[in-house]
Image 1 (cartoon, helix red, strand yellow):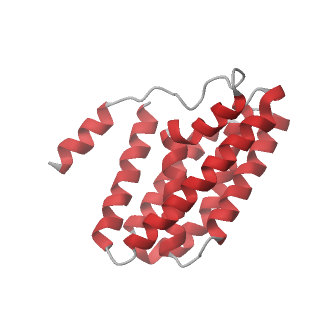
Image 2 (image 1 turned 180 degrees about the horizontal axis):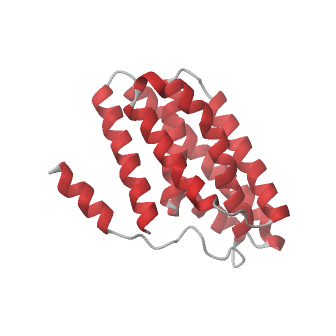
Length: 181
């Protein structure tokens, strides 16, 4: 049954809702961006979970959020970066590996803010220059909420290694869907 579910997920190509032009309503687009882009949604939830599992309290989510915003400013100022989408997808694989390899969780969790920089870079490039600050206010707000939600979920997962592995498998499946999409 699990194999069928994974196969079904791999065959579904999600439209790229998270990467439209952001000029009609930049604040609303920013608020929705982390929720409608599977890559951003999973990275933020995964980082929050890792923070809880590795005992990092909220320092890892804060570092991730800061790096994401810093990346957005860099993307806004310098434009597109070759390979950024690959790095974004790789962040899901790293988060999944951290779930599936508990002995490496602490080390792999430290890498997540680096990947967040590239998620942010993509945000900065996608935002219409005149709407960048409004768009950024939206995506930073919802990103913070998703990191906290992931942290809460991670606190619940601390004593359930099977749920951690299932979550890690979900992150891997999500990375595959992002690659296909």
